[in-house]
Length: 311
Image 1 (cartoon, rainbow, N blue to C red):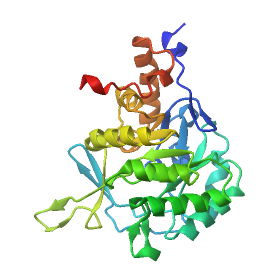
Image 2: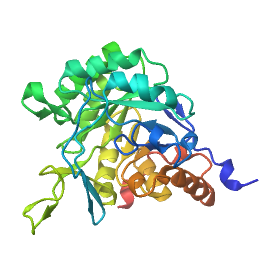
Image 3: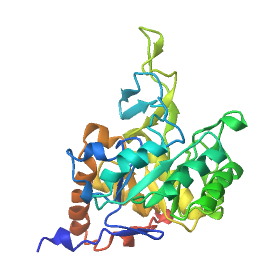
Image 4: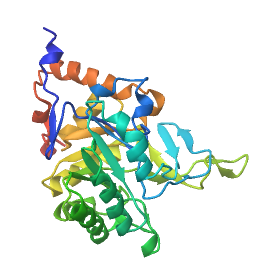
């Protein structure tokens, strides 16, 4: 018997069972179905589709991506077909795959978050919702929902009121105390947390005196952000009793295990999928072998085993 097959990679994210902890992150994997001919969707722990708004959005001007020495900067601008077209055009094909489908939800107001969630409630084939609370809150003068515990709680409570499925809350990394916001999201009805979104950044060309992307600024992701996000996962997991999903710079099986050590119950892979559409499946295969080589028979045994006294 292949020793890697004796490793139990299954995880529980609240009421949701995943065959393994490697999830394709929102905004980096399309609606999932676009990758069907490039990788084995059935091998994934779950798929988080790109963010869904109440109405279709055209997104930011091009170019939208720019490589950095250890990752990339993006400003896609939340382009999407809108929740109604997602349900009618994208979701039917996704139902044929084993991987649970997580719908990423965003809005400009609390009411829009609730309305998108309400539409998804009537659709079969969605396993959970991921509330992206780092979108601009236009109704409050552009303050980000994820920047205060009070606003985070308002969005989660509104979605919880209309949604019966599990609620994941995608937190912003650009806060002074992620623990307080994590706890507010939990107390308002969140079932899990995704930590975290991208970091504000710029890339300029001195020749043109302009930005390398269509917007002046964008979000930094990839290898460079892993050490910072690792700390945020550590802090958030110590502040709440619900699962934390780590997202930031994951490219290898070792990255996954490091996130587990500091408190993650699963991970999401984002930027790595741009360079390699098969990144998630590759990491899953590596993870089975790495755990077997260190006699880790159940990946959950690593969670929150970080020993601060040794550092």
